[in-house]
Every structure is written in structure tokens, then in C-alpha cells.
Length: 361
Image (cartoon, rainbow, N blue to C red; front, side):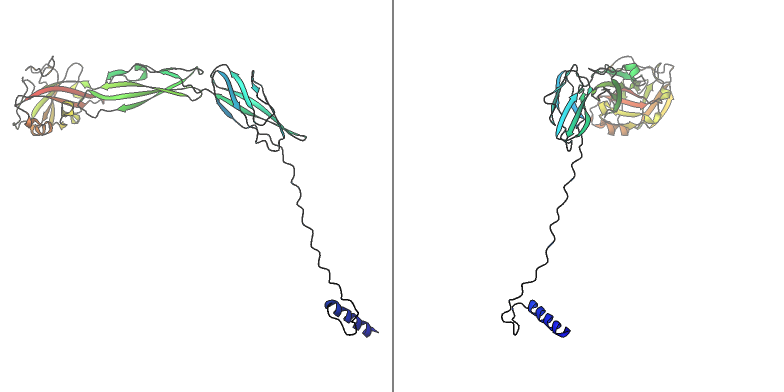
């Protein structure tokens, strides 16, 4: 019995696996239906995103130039994520919005002066049953610089007081700030030619800054000149005849007087030039202290033959070959008067200048 059932099952399975083949003795048997395919899984449906978190963002800070009259500024609350409605408010006398219920209204408010101030604006946003509030600052800023007035320019001799206490301070006024900060900075300019009276020029830049960092400047010019000494070429002789062919050193005396102490001269600083640096500099060959001459009172190339006056002088001697070459004296006609300049530095740091003439032979 078990053998017969097994054979029958085997035959049925064979027919199912090959439905289009007809078994012997089963010509009237219909073909087996196809095996059902495996049903696919249904597509995954993603979860809906959570509702956005409501945030309030009033933008800013907003910077506006302060000016007397009416000032307008456009606000921006569009970065308030999740918001579906907006409402702006401000607590400033006379201020108003063109539409307080839009994300980016225009705020207009009156300004009595052109000084700086801050105005706070408030924003409230809604979404469904959520509400958030925030605020922003509108900064009105004064952009008018102070009005600054410089002290008068000055001209002084080296050694004089060049401080603001002696020459004056700049003053400044401002449309808003009653305590303008005023400072100064000095820039020294030295002349290109040392054989000139000017020792240096001070460019004193005054700077005024108000409490909104607006700046105004002015420049005070202070000319500082060298001290003047008396000079005598060939002391004790007049006229000052210069022999270009002599091998002797040329003596030139820097004369001492009641306001010029020759003992304060730094010997190594002594230099000789032509007028306006037309030749030179030539250094002294030797220097010594002696009372050899009396200052000449006059102008131009005048001279006298007076010797010592009881005051100590400083005698510098120069090599004539060096002078001939540096000043181009060999090329000048005999009898030509040449102005020479002698400069040097005093122990206190100031420079001096002295001038005389020689007549080439």
C-alpha cells in the first residue's frame, strides 16, 4: 500500500515539474498550473518630517547715518525659521512702520540732531500655537568729524622750547561730543643741505577724535634753525685774501661772544662748505682754542683787522689743496669773492652756522 501511494505521488510531482509533458496513460489529464511567484515586499514609506522649530530673528544690528530730520531703515525678519506671521513694535517717540505685520518693514523715526543713539525694535513671530519674541538694535551714528584748529606755526632757534606748552595746543569742537580727544605726533624733516640756516622742521600733526571715532587733523609747522656764530677767515687780516698756491693751512676762527661759548663746540663736527652746499664738506685739519679776533659788526663780506677781544675763540685750520678741489677755487678769476659756510655741533646737541668771505688770488 505504501509503495502504491509513493508511486502515485511521484507521478504527480513529475507532472507538476513538467506540466507540458503528458505522461503515458494520462492523455486526458490537463496540464498543471504554473507555480505562484514569490510576492515582493511593499515599498517603504518614509516617516513625515517633524514640524519645524519656530525661531525668531530680527536681524541687525542696523547702522544708519545720523542726520537731523527723519531717518528710515528697512528691517529684516526673514531668517525667523518656521514663522507664518510677524509683528514688529518699537518704543521710540514718533517712530512708525509702513507695515508692522510683514517680515521686512521699513521703520521711520524722527531725529532731533545728528548725534548718535540706539533704537530697539521688537519682533514677535507665530506659527500655529507657537510664539517667539526677539529684538534688534538700530544704531544711528554721527559721521561728522570734529572741527579742529591748529596753533600758529613757529620759528625757533635750536635749544628753545618746542613743546606744545610753549607753542600752544590745538583745539577742537564737535556737533555732539563735548569732550573731543586731541593728541599730536611730531615728524622731523631734515634739510638736504647742511650749509643752510635750517636745522630741521617739525611737522606736528594734531588729531581730534570724537566718541564715534570721527577724525579731523591739522598740521602745525615749526622751523628750528641753527644757532649763529661769528666767523673770521684769516683772523687779524682784512681783506681776507686767499692764496690758492700756498702750502700753509688756512686759519678760520669761530669767534666766542657773550651768547656763544666756543668751548661747547665738538671739534670733530666742524665742516666747511660753499654757499648753499656749492662744494664741500671739508673737515678741519687741526683745531685749537685761542683769542685771535673780534667779531665784525656789519653785513656782506666786510671785515676788519682787529685781533683778540678778551674772549676765547676756536681756530680751525684747513688744507688749501682740499679747499681748492672741493670748492673749485682754482677755476675762479683772481679777485673773486667766495662766501664760505662753517657748521658744527655743540655739546648740547644743537648745530651752529657761521659765514664769512675770502677773496681768491
